[in-house]
Image (cartoon, rainbow, N blue to C red; front, side, top):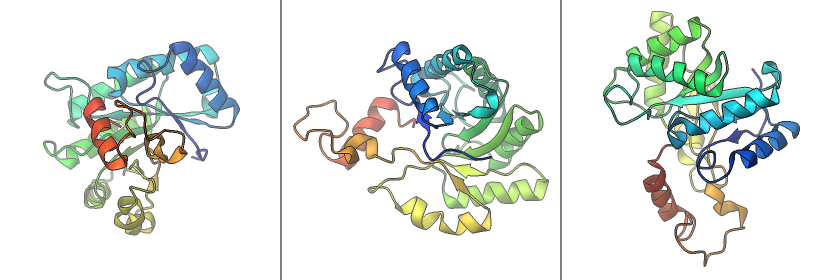
Length: 238
């Protein structure tokens, strides 16, 4: 599967900072300009971001083979079984994402964070089953360590299950260690692919944000502190 060099994501903006009309306009511009990957997650605006995106995809009627859509599973709610990477939540979250996005399958499905409370084998089995059922084409991880990714690959190989094929880490001039060093052996060893988030450091690297801009701009006091503000405001759910 081939992706464009740029994707269009719904984090922070859809169902929160912009109107549905603006969201449709931006997605249309992205699609018409060659972007074919639309990124989302159950955590974004508590699922409302996927509803907005799904309504737009249905309205536009773009051929399904001309775009890629993703979702992520981990933060589905505050009640028991609505969070984490247990088989129950992974399966139910996938079904919910399909309904919200109004598609028959997800091209990419990410484990939004590692889950220390669920054995990796359980998560690998759940993801592999979704692929066997045709509900997901490829599964991957986001903000996992190289060690955890290798463990998931080893389990999948041993049990003849579908392995994770991609990781979504943060990557920009301020955040380079994981992509450039930690994951380096994985690119050739297991063929790890990446689709990064925040390449412009939440806008700081555009040079368009005045240093005098007051809170709650997430770039007011430098990237390190702005990241903490952003994580506090969004639950660290990119």
